[in-house]
Image (cartoon, rainbow, N blue to C red; front, side):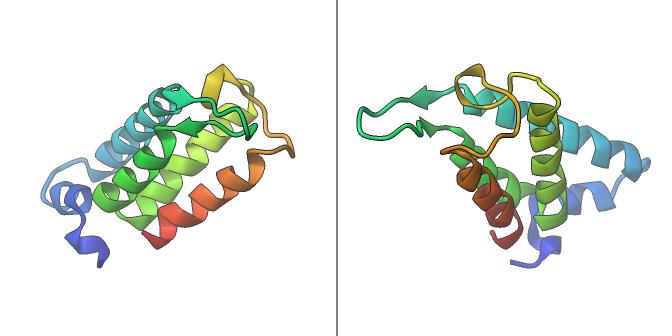
Length: 113
């Protein structure tokens, strides 16, 4: 998929104040990711919950394009890294635990999708 085929870049290209719209979409996307991460299902056989965050990463990558989606996800990781409770189950902080591989993988997925 070419980035010009994504929904948001096509819309932004036709508007004035493109830098402001880019910022608004990136911040709005990080808020959407934080909200979807709170939709979680814990399974008894794994410490990693199933979350709506996976759907959010794929949705943003398809609609935002790869650069905006990666920027959105990096902002989301930054928010969690500074202590905001944006990760699943209201957790925060970047630590090397069971979920860190998933967080890195979702960054890669936001670029590849």
